[in-house]
Length: 229
Picture 1: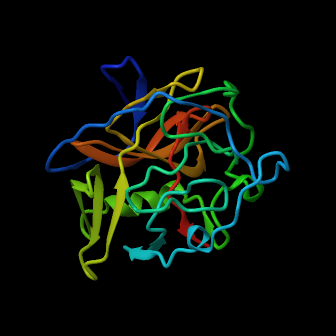
Picture 2 (picture 1 turned 45 degrees about the vertical axis):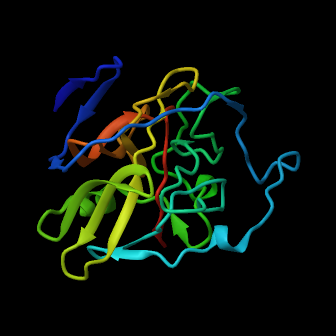
């Protein structure tokens, strides 16, 4: 394992091969305060929208991926370019992908995997394992390209056999103890696989490289891109 210090002062540990991309882009945050949302809370209702809970998905290297990030629990984001919401590992509460928040938890959730009861994915979908995320970086079967899609920067994965493609936006995450945003221009996606009682694995990419199998603090808030059950 080697340790990389980023310019914003965060320490990240990497344990996977990297993939080089083509270009780079920018990210920007809007000032706004929001609280987490949970459809199981009667004071925080979620209006069901059929188009937000269904997704045909796309198969890349044998794994069927949703084409959009998870937004509110049980819903997909409106478009493939939408950031959706951020989630702390093994928690169902949704956090805004922009602005500041209140009520952030600075403790790690317990558990040895992302439990079904805490999975925010819509019905028929789940948080992927780290092994499933690694299949996106199998260079023998998948190409990876940093690109801009409808004005949003991110990574496009394309299956070499079928030419199916999948776009993941680089939305950053909530990486500080108070839930403050950080790592703008990075794509950070949780897996369901734990590393230890404080850490879990995630997928990571930016304009220069990407990989799966990074370990990071469970209390941080990252995107979720679901796979079919």
